[in-house]
Amino acid sequence: MRLLLVGPPGSGKGTQAGRLAAHYGIAHLASGDLLRREVEQGTPIGKIAAGYIQRGDLVPDEIALRVMAGPILEAARRGGYVLDGFPRTVHQAEEAYRMAERIDGIELQAVVHLKVGRDELRRRLLYRHGQEGRADDIQATINHRLRVYDAETAPLLDFYARRGLVAEVNGEKHPDKVFAHIVAALDALESERRRPV
Image 1 (tube, rainbow, N blue to C red):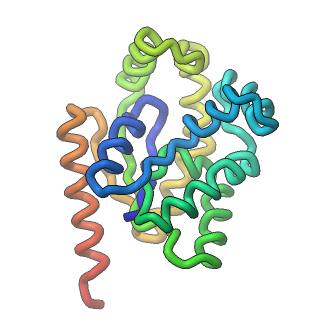
Image 2: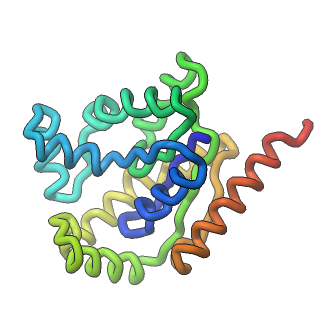
């Protein structure tokens, strides 16, 4: 199983990706976690990424691709992955698609779109800031991150919808219900894919 979760900051991607990874026995690859690790370790990539993360901006496409390519290839060889936070731009998606054309067994099979209203997103992110102290979860940065999502990441949905990969899920419900709806949507996509033409 090879999945991508798409949704704005605070939509529950990390929570659901972890549950899906455990459910399907696949790797959870969170670009934000991998980038923050690079920052903590003071690597050359981390030094470049630090300012972008602090401001709530997306790291340049080439940095995201360098950080994610290896883990995606490894996870695909081991049975699959659920991506959380990559790709975040149409350019990244196009590059990943070109890579998948050259390497068998790494292409996405489904994209889950977690839909959550803006008021709920802000409430969740401010709560997370209070609990975890994440620097990118303060009010000014939250508003900026949502604008960046609208401009850069939301267009991914059209890119993947044209390929018949998108399943829409209401992400405002209790996490258990969201998870059940995701699994049901993935089962429906798989049944549709297997139906004879």
